[in-house]
Length: 319
Image 1 (tube, rainbow, N blue to C red):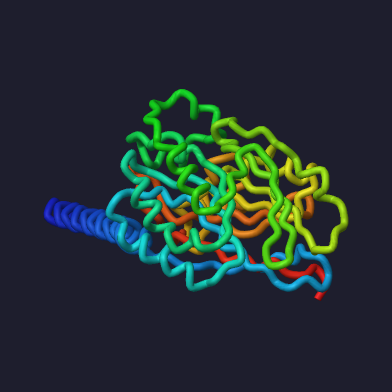
Image 2: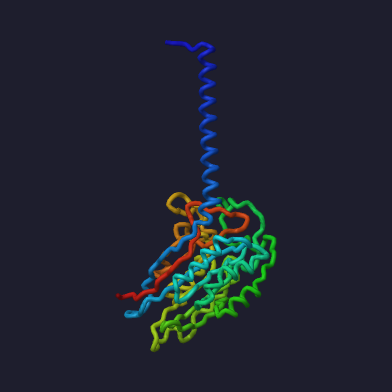
């Protein structure tokens, strides 16, 4: 058996120490590179996701919905504004805005500038919590370990945003607020029956159901759409019970910080994380959840979850 002298032991310790230091240094570099990617590249890597929902009556022509959500506008966001302007080139039949429009007390002019070209199209909207209250500084990673079901929303400091001014500006451009109310619009020969709620994350939601005539046959093809900000399970289930044929929501940011492949760790509500982005089914009804276009001004980072607008084509259930 060979024994080690003191020189050999010391050399081994020095080698091990250098190896550990190299590993830690490599990890720090990788972590810094990941943080830089998430903060400076992916945060502004805007894109358009496309979905097809076969929910229209047989023989109906296609109808294109641009779904935007979670803009969280801050003054000076030129890249986001340019991208939102480009969305007008998609020529949607309808714009659905599912809330969380602001992330700064002075963000309204920037928001209205970004939305400017989209106001030329018919639109509907519902608010999120960041349409009422500006975000406050807090640990941006706490959602990774703390289950967030909205019950803590009332305990946080609240800086009132210019909600009414924002909604007045939307209304003045012809967009229709669906804040705990139903409404009916006919666009390009399609009768759209809406049921919308105020933000479930704040427990502001009071379901109105659909208009009494929403289930009646008419000369125009029709579809019933539920619209909300936060896709809590109680909200989705109620829309299904009320007769919605498709549901639109935002709030989740798609998980915001995800594993490779876009696998969300959380949804910021009680929706299962695997449903935090894209189309899933609730009682057989398609639920379209947007990953959104922004983040809180105090958590400006995205990882494996780029910001998005969604172009949803409503098409005939029977081609």
